Image (cartoon, rainbow over all chains, first blue to last red):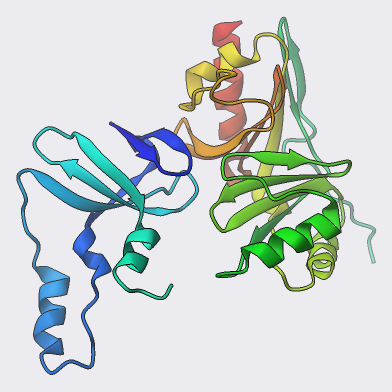
Length: 95
Length: 185
């Protein structure tokens, strides 16, 4: 599998570590009323998608960047690769 | 006190094969530069003032008279220069005056220089990156993995490359590169 890194171009998947569902970017508000329930969901509950899924990949043997890779779990076809920090900023994160 | 001097990690390895020469390059100082959040413009300016180098794009390096600057990531670069003393990092920190965070990396890496007409053929076997001129021109640099060891590859010239890997597994890395060369030459 080849991941087309947005800065470095096509790289072999062996350089990356799979870090799971990109929903991990959306850390719940710890001050909310239902914070305990939200954190339980955040920690333990994952959708088991058969199809297109946004995933986190870490470029460990590379530039150490975190990526959001949109991949079809049935075909391994990758449709988009973005820097995770760009995705997080777009969702309103400051850093 | 005893007068100590640093020893090369691989004892100054130097081997010439028919069309490839593989040597350990010692005496290089390596200092990593981390660019603070939102501080790229200030860092670029400070690097230019201190070393006369433009901060290259990720995947590239820039060479000046004495320094080579390798962009290893969006917010990170590695500065390489001849200096065998412990004051390399303090000197870089002072020269950049707070525009980058600096970390001494000299002892963490082993540096191999591979050159000669058979170099690319030897590297094709262990390096997963495309080293063709159109994809990896002179001065291009990239971190990747070779024989399960993390490595940084840099193209110094048409037929000369630098390979950096962890000093703790230096002998295994040398063995991997050596084997690849012997099997292709």
